Image (spheres, rainbow, N blue to C red):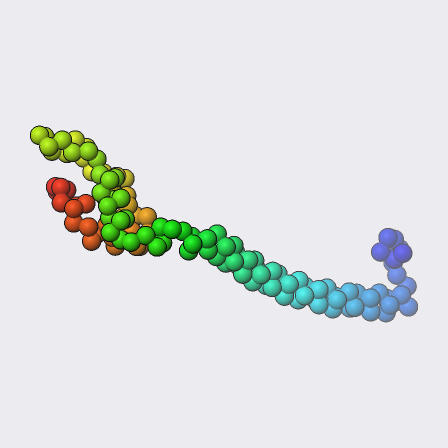
Length: 127
């Protein structure tokens, strides 16, 4: 109608156009507020979902048999990760940050504690 025309509106139509524009402006402001509220709610729900997914991902580890394995057995397993030793010439392999005992100490807090408290893992390290 008037929006699709190049003709100037008549004086009687100007009042109607102002009213329609005012209504449209207030409705747009209302919609913008509602969109902002829903976007905040969506962010909150996405954060909650991410937390639950992380919990769901880590949760089964609680049931792992390794969680209940005695520290003494774990320290023995850690000892088996050491490189072979030749009694006549000493250690054949040098330690690196990506080899035992450094590696097992990086797995989790419990393994770090067990590795640090197992002196035989560290006795042949020379600085």
